[in-house]
Image 1: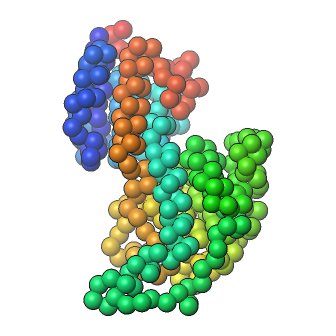
Image 2: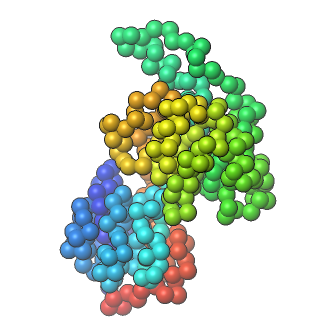
Image 3: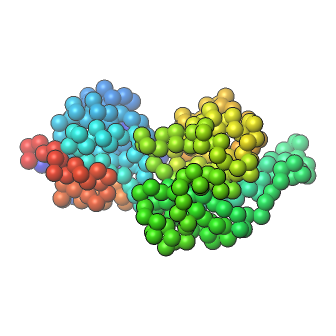
Amino acid sequence: MTVKVFQVDDGAGLEPLDDERAVIEAAGGELIVENCKSEDEVLAKAGDAEIFWVAWDPWMSRRVMAALPNCRLVMRWGVGYDQIPIRDATDLGIAVANAPAYGTDDVAEHAIALLLSTARNIPFLHGGMIGAQGGWPSVANRPMHRMKGRTLGVVGVGRIGSAAARRGIGLGLRVIGYDKYRPDHELQAMGVEPVSLDRLLEESDYVTLHVPLNDETRGMISRARLAQLRPEVILVNTARGPVIEEAALIDVLRERKITAAALDVYGYEPLALDSPLRSLDNVVLTPHVAGSSFEANIDLRADMVNTVVEWIRDSWSPRVLNPQVRPNLRPRLHS
């Protein structure tokens, strides 16, 4: 039986998928690209597809997965998988996977680049020197601190958070970290001091967020948490926008209760043209590109294809995020 792989939504920049299609066909599969615009369109076109690739849109809801009897694996183009309701998938006997090799170094580099450029006022200074009004801008009212010896707090010390921590240590920063799922000795082994989230927020000069978006982390940097930050703090977010209570962040920035924020992700994307974040002078913004690079794209495609090949061969992959589903995995139709 040919295992069908269904590209669910419009993955801008993914095509052409000729190389991926060739590898999948050689393994005994078939790649179907439909770029659906709704849940109903997925239901109408997916047929007996077994593996579903998701780029950005949340069309693989519980309703959709329940109605597709041969859906056995849903896989995200990327590391974050908040577009896929993993608990519902587990209940339905469906595995969920991501592309864990994708973007680790790239996101860490981007987070540190945002921190460096914000701490040194680079966007402000550059903007003040170009264009018709270009001049010789002063930082008299934008004090800068030497970064060496200051404290970087890393929230979420997984693959990406660890990579960001190592870069912070290389800059001469004291690095503290919060990760409830990693034992203290693992953080200590990499030179990171394990602390509670409260202590991290209270002691850090710089905070960088590297947690997945789920029920536990949605809004974790709330208005109350933001109030714990020191006035000199720069807050960096390359994780997911809804990890921060965005309205509260805007208020904190307007009132200058923290020095600045550097953001690559937002509560809703693309960021609205009238968002106050676009007009604040203590914010540095980039358009969700932290994971982007030529090399990251190669890693991403390799993870996606390798998982399909493993799944066709073994009905399993080490990249599955909910391994507890394995004993109750849906049987393959017509096997």
